Image 1: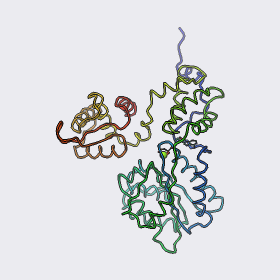
Image 2: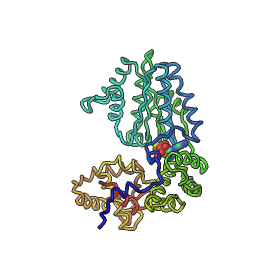
Image 3: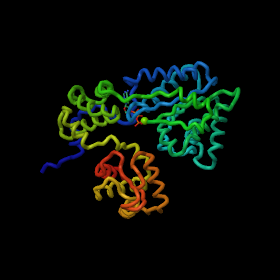
Image 4: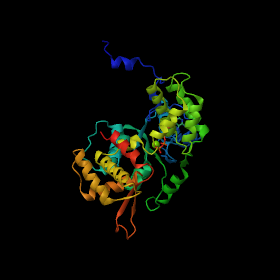
Length: 398
Ligand SMILES: Nc1ncnc2c1ncn2[C@@H]1O[C@H](COP(=O)(O)OP(=O)(O)OP(=O)(O)O)[C@@H](O)[C@H]1O
Ligand SMILES: [Mg+2]
């Protein structure tokens, strides 16, 4: 009898992909079609950091809808800035911080300090001490920093604007000392509370807001066109397929969604062993995904939070209702904790997580009207069908 070697089988299969990594969410392409004007504005604003180092610091805000290229543009720009600085012997560093992942001022300051002192210990200092050390090490070693605070809107809703205030003060208050820290804040929508900023900081920030529009179908075609060449073997992606993707994704103008559909359609072709990516694979991919379900958002959530979210989804699905009560969610939460061998947390903690998930935009909460169910908090899902969320969480819980 012939023994089947599954590993060799798999290795021997041909694939439509040439280099799949060019479709991964972390990849930032060298060229960013349809964002040239934005990159130019950034360059005009920040070139002073290179022409007159230390003379002034810049603060800038990038805002725009999901998948409109904010993170990609900020990262690519910071890369070009540091390279230009290096060529001129200026010690300009860049640091990209995702504020969804680094959820406190302390963690953010620690990341900044570690840019200059990589082995700096995690504990043992106050945030104020860290700030002080940051400025000291930059002064003594003559460093400059271009700091990107990504998903800043999320952070500000959770923690307010203190961090911006403290970081700005860090540089602006030092008369006659070199200005070493410049900031690009990135988010979907960033609102400024006037009570936190002095008038001059506020007005600089308001002048330096760059708003990204969502991508048109044509723009998405150009963006995908570049990726197709890098990621796939020649001729496997049909033009009609790209058209379908761009039509679907242009409703939101979301390049991430477009790229994900393309990647999934390719996976489907491999699965079926064909060498053409036909439009139907995209339609299938669309049915399987939901743009709101972003893996990186869920990856940043602690296990307990994901369990709570799963409890909400399951309760909503089983109740077939638009909203469920806090009590019902907690009951389900307890039973899922048991299922996963996790210790369920107290009501106050669970309540706090519910607030947190609401800020993430993952769930919706509202107070019930008096009457039917008494005064209680009702919990629903913003965009995603409960069943899809449940499935997704089960796949990603481990
Ligand atoms: N102009 C572009 N050219 C090529 N790729 C792009 C372009 N704009 C966005 N992308 C790609 O699309 C994906 C989403 O872009 P990005 O992460 O920058 O979106 P975002 O605006 O930061 O979204 P979010 O608000 O969800 O964080 C990334 O993989 C990025 O590389
Ligand atoms: Mg982003």
